Length: 290
Ligand code: AHG
Ligand code: MN
Ligand code: MN
Image 1 (cartoon, protein in one colour):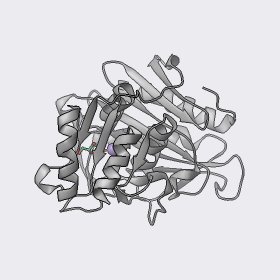
Image 2 (cartoon, rainbow, N blue to C red):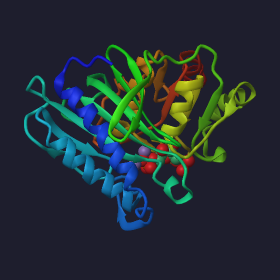
Image 3 (cartoon, rainbow, N blue to C red):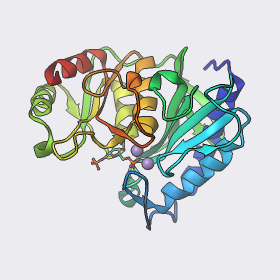
Image 4 (tube, helix red, strand yellow):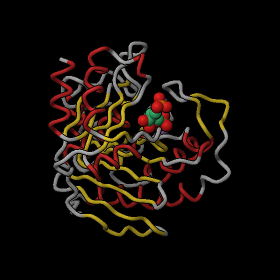
């Protein structure tokens, strides 16, 4: 990976080191706490703990002006203004994606987006983004404006395992969130055609499913629902960073109408319908929904 900016390089290295600590600390932190996060999800101990750890480590980096997280109501100001100072950035994280999978011991992730703007901001202001996948082994995918790289993480070390990651040409897997009766008719119609073509992979952690899409090609979607038209996933912490990764890998992201990265946010914790994957599949989805 080439990251020319030292602040960005430092932030990426810090996330990768902290991820190793997060993974080691999951044991004993599977229970829920008596709190909800700003979007109303029940927090587990590990959500709060991973957020505190990332806040502590990332906010102490020179050039990180804001730390924002799915688990805290407001961004933390930590020196410098990403809007006016060059080489000062905001970092938005989903400390543990799919944390309800802790109970059943399935995959989870950590997502981060580095914005050259105060958050909430458009995804187009992202300069680097990525995620850690806590699977049987811990891997990390980092996207910059130049390339997408996959690493393995062991004992704080980051080893490249795949350079210039791109989505395979022939899509293989799909995963869609939400209950089928709660899907709008147009989305159900689209899903019906996809079921005939691809294999189902749904893990309960977006990162687990997105990493399948990046490996095998295909589509992951969490649509707007009849009961919740705004969808479930959060634009700043999940949609924009993952949209950036998939677009840099040659795929597309969409809220059903347009790239996630071009959406103007109204507030930090806003949700969005989210679709990422092979460009032709996202094009088809937009024509069916449109
Ligand atoms: P988080 O644990 O950060 O709140 O994210 C959970 C998300 C996402 O990872 C996943 O795709 C989706 O919620 C799963 O939702 P369902 O349980 O509705 O399938
Ligand atoms: Mn999440
Ligand atoms: Mn989370």
